Image: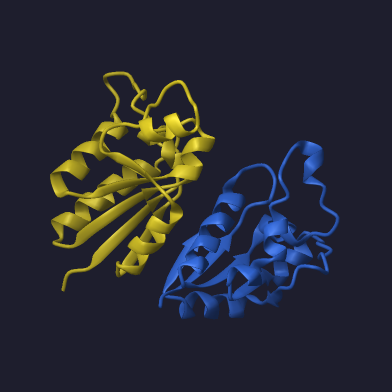
Length: 132
Length: 117
């Protein structure tokens, strides 16, 4: 029997283990034949959605890893808009609305409300959070 | 509809963790989920009386909890052991239920989703 998962990531991308664990878990979910519709980033996890993240070349680029995963398996990378704007993550449309000079949302990520997380949870059998 | 138990472990000050957790849980309630919130550890300080977070330039996030029932949250539980550990004097305007370790175990078992913040 296959199950549908929603992943909620709240850990910061480069100072904690949460994103790496979430990526490993997400790959395992797909390998086991289950489905992931939405990966929702909230709290400090939204920093992963900045296209300006530039780790040294001998380290994993977690933003790129999520983009690859999402493209390969057609998974939505949904980023909390409130948490993002608090932290300086912004897409073009929101930058224009908020009269900000620039935007930095990486390709493959979309800014969404928390309602999107609630909808995804309602449509899933499992909600798994990666906080640490 | 699914039920969610949101367990908050962190103090109202020092990080945005509990504030963002409460925001999220209230949205779940607005979308029809049966939401219960459990305050454990330093999170019991959310119900402490006479808080003045404005002195350190913080919004009073505990004010959200005073109106939790208006946001369609079903239960606000507070860990009775943590209340004693922190010698917390509760704000009488926040209505909550003190619960024991056994009741916490039951609450975890009874909800379809558990989010630990």
